[in-house]
Image (cartoon, rainbow, N blue to C red; front, side, top):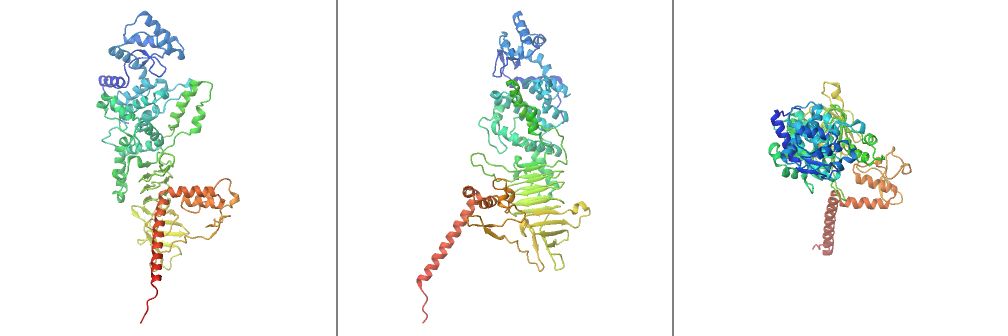
Length: 608
């Protein structure tokens, strides 16, 4: 992380600007809704060193006012607000500046601890400490409060992670004030910055931004949905990003508008896609900003979040103290969005791009996604849409849904496509299949250039790079649920005849008590009576979830479940298309029957 360093005078000017812009001037001590006594530019009297700070400020006080400050210092933590609200001194803006300067040394503590130079980044962290509290950043071991994750991210130089923690995961614990605190954090994160230089983003920086985004994707979506603008462009009812840009004009003039998450990711998307076009020139026309929303790019994050169960056990919320319980609720939330691991290039990720609409009847959202694995053994799952899945190094598994999906594979990978529409690319070229001559082993085919050998066993196709010099590169690729013609791969028998597809109609039997023909289960499938509970999804015999659900319900004789499945299918896009096709076929059949009846009524033609 490269700091945007400042001289002392410029640092002092900007620091005052950021804090004063985000704090209202409180002329007298008052409770602003957080159960604290606040005066000036957000100075809280809830501390034990008021006398020292006010002496340092040079502000003149009466004897009674000094006594009140001393009483606040001596009071218990629970009683300081009550005593502080009796402080009678009123401050103007200049005096509030004096108090701010005198108190600032305390809030510089976390930045000093991290040895941050005078910089915009330091200003953002000091502003955060001023509002959130030094103890909530440095940690308070006696109170079981850990050091906040933002500290370690700064220590590691992980700018993207610091930006996430500041913008999304360090707002505080006062639910009634959350909206205003979210607005402030949006602004402070803009002061810190997501990039060293947004106009000169490096490929490593772009990948690190997307690692952060993938690691915290769900939390980012939740916060933006409630307080900002989603990556799809949907604004919250009360958009705190827009409010920050409206309410902090001086900060905006200095640092620019607070961006939406889509705009923030924009520079990283552009650089990442440019790098991918260089790595995969055969896909250059598709790997463009125009084809992929910034939020539709999924990259292996290289590490995992903390285990939620472990976090919850560490911070119980059923103690005898409401104060501890409330604090632990906030600590749980923050610790759920932290990681204790460094980025591991061999990390094995499971990335699933499925997104559902919200509401009572959620539906899968069709869109084009880009899924990228890196060094480990990753699992990439895409769904409806024309997606691109890039496995990267390692033995990866790729699964695609409805739509024209493109799989960029390497030796050892496995893939499965639900509808057989799309393409598979290996080493910059598509796999198109091959032919078998009479002397070749059964079910074995060779590409025209002799590079790839295809072997089909039932519906499992293996593809081997026969020309690879490294033995590891000869490890076959496995394509499950395959038939000749799927994914642009055609297998030709001797004489150039395309291999016939497998029989789509397996043997059938009557379902128990229903009289409807269903496929026989495989020999390894358990009998109906062996099911532990419900309709066992492991007994899938089709490549369609509706058919598998109906199959299980038929075997169980569950009429209600059948009715539910039929109703759900009729509302789905697939069901509606099927209904349209059925209506067309019925209309054609009726027209044909009418024509036949008309010819019959005319009778035979008499020949003279």
